[in-house]
Image (cartoon, rainbow over all chains, first blue to last red; front, side):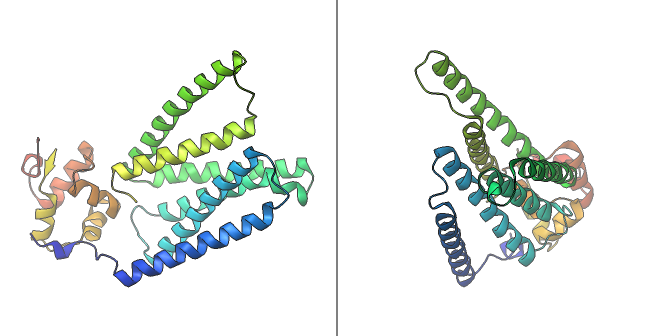
Length: 195
Length: 63
């Protein structure tokens, strides 16, 4: 069997360069968010949302780099749509926290609604453009996330109804939902060898 | 399910990306098929058989 026909593996130098790039991005995000949130973010829900937003924007930026350096024609448009979905999700998680520094709450909410509509269209286009394995990964991610979320939600709701724990805000629950979805996505992708 | 995708591709001197182009799927999908991480749908299995000019049962076998 001729293994030399496989896609060329990235060289050690290229891997090292990618690591340096990722470290630089992580450092930049860490510094940026530490500066941004200094004295601004005081609730754990906001901390979680900022963390999720940083993760999504970070992955979006790295994906954009991969799309730019290793473009793939098939399935057409999937790479760029994934980047758009990730970046929009990250921005939408930041707007409720930081948006009111520049605009009134109703304007910020309007902006979120517009971005959400755009992201929904991008998600739909991604589904239509994806090949069958990517669709399978999306379905498995959704199933895994739903199972985990409904399990966690029931346990939390029961404990909250019994007065054993305090109430978590909808914003906090949304951040947790996104975290669970993220983990489910990593698990579903890794099972198919997508890293 | 086992398959002979990697061998058949190597015999034709195709890269994973070239096979992916012919099948209309991503290179990651071809890689997942070859490493047994993903079993194709029937339509994709028929397409693979067509591309290699062999019957499905000559490419895919049960564990």
